[in-house]
Length: 517
Image (cartoon, rainbow, N blue to C red):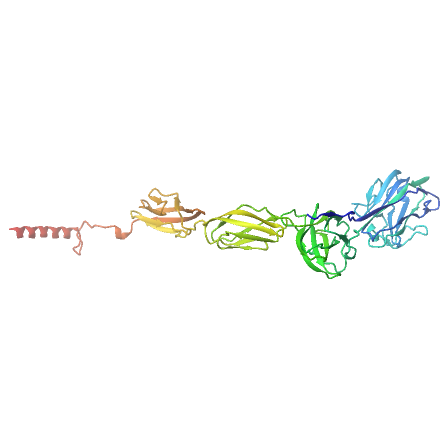
């Protein structure tokens, strides 16, 4: 494996600047009173435009904090009144107050403790009504620390502190203050891409931004992308991937010299890896410069990562060694493998199913039942891995198609045949009336009803694929008129009664005796 480590990781630019010169804040009978150092300043250099600014007041002591007005001013003249008319009237000693937009709340009007707070100006507005002594600005204040974002931070930053009310007499003080600036990584833009050479390097998407014309693999905003330039050392295939990452990354590879670039590859989730990792295998041409963009899929998920470029290794199949299907029913089997296969193979695939050699997905509706030894493969330029998959295709469970109703008559033999699809091998019926039986081999119900009524019988038909069910409702009625003979024991007018029949019989017997004489 070709693996060359870069000497310096690329990090988001976060720098801390300190002013450790103490100052006093005296109270007087003619407020507002300036602090002893007015303004207190520190110098910033070497920073790109910030995406986050925080300030901390260190070793803060005051008998009546509500009297204070504090304004932070950037080198470009942008100003935020970070604290005014808050903190209450109780004395505080040696507290540290951090002002940051990430805080959950501003400073209370009634008390003050060490902690992190949002901008805390009770009279917060673009033109506060608490005037600051010259040369502090008195208008155009921002309402959050984000007011400084995106503007040149290099130069002198100033803090103006004044006591605007009598009371709380005595000397108040602060031991110094700290300014923290966070900017995008040095390789935030394409023009400043970090140059790497078939290597493992560390980077971060924290504080990354997008630039005009920048493309991205997924339509999620805002972007947190950073850029790397890599010159292919030889023609062939290389693996490019993010590793050692705890959030969802995306990976794009482009060619070209300026926007719009030509995309040659993209990946969100590396095959057979965690959802956080991105990776792809790329066919490259020796000497070509490839622009690699690493991004965070979600704006809230940013942080460090490793970017690795290496030679491919033979894939290793990780998908299941058994699979099942049902005759005539669409099914899917996906060949999964690590180490970035570029194509897939399969032999002995059940009839009716086909392989997509690019995705490794086998789909279709099997047309033959049975057991199949399917051999699948995962391939890249380093080699091929194969695996035998035992695929069992079963017949579908029978479906009962015979009538759901039947009629029977008391005293008359009755039959009903269970008819079903799927070539059943056995049948069942329950509960059965006492007069009815089932032949489980043929599915024939037979018997002679003995009483009128209605019988509901649950039917079943079974094969290797399972059991299908149904219900037949049998209605049993009494005998019909054609099956019953009524006899009249008296003569009737037509001479067809019992008496006429007897006379005819007697006459026949007499005629027979006469013939014998």
